[in-house]
Image 1: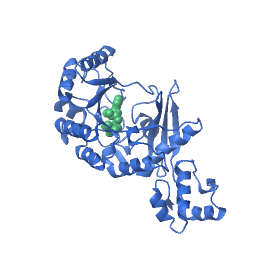
Image 2: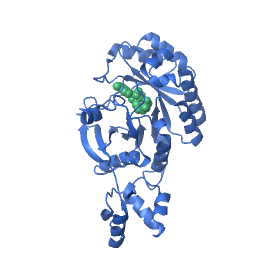
Image 3: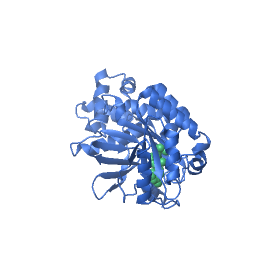
Image 4: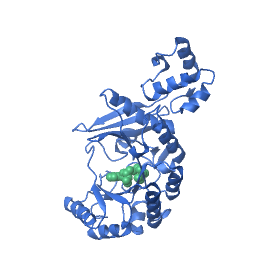
Length: 343
Ligand code: SAH
């Protein structure tokens, strides 16, 4: 049976062409704003229409198979399972400026970054636009019970969003619609390991989301060791695309830089980083690594983080250190899924 969840209003209208148009609007509101997970719950549709819809369609949304709350109550991580059994992590972070949801874009990941838990078992499949949207709507429904809603989106969970471009774009456009969350593109951050042609596509599409680029090393040799994608798109190209994105959108690009003890956290690395970013409209976000059991990397010392930060800060680079969210609840991308699914 055809799943109606994930369709745009226009697609719903086409699908339900035998009904008056306002029915599609009602159904969209039930799906995306009013938390209905069955046609029977759509109480302003006649019984006959509900029965008819039940025969022709389904509403397929994921089930929660695990939920972990951090001790401070600020972070909740969900493991959501789709009808085919595939499961992904979705994280709710309660910031003082609002509720942020971090979604996965793929089941697993094929990028192979050496420090990351999401890629340990490779890529199973892309998520569809409807599946990504369902992660966000799930959290929005969850928050409704607290009279709250999703305020910002970070596309930073498992998967490389820019290798699932068409579905990503459809999801972002859907989320922007007034019959879903009406979320402004400025409230969305998309994180990429640096798929250069897709960054230019994003510029062409004029979807002015905040772009976050995972850099993690200031030279090609080290970056290639940590991130195999660097063989396809080297630092120069990635930084060029980041610069072009900032120029085209007028928005600062964030460069993510994981600090790994003894690997990329010395003053010399900071110096090189400041050099290659000089003059760019950007921020650097330093992330002390979340060590992953299967990987042989350790946290940087507190002192190393401070020094790295200070160096950039005093060399004209906008820099922040990521606030730690959800430590103790398998916070690194993919850790909860790996524990539940693969062990
Ligand atoms: N594929 C995209 C988005 C998913 S990863 C990307 O590469 O940006 C989201 C961020 O988490 C990236 O910056 C990634 O490098 C980082 N990350 C992955 N494993 C991590 C770990 N063990 N500790 C801290 N950050 C990690």
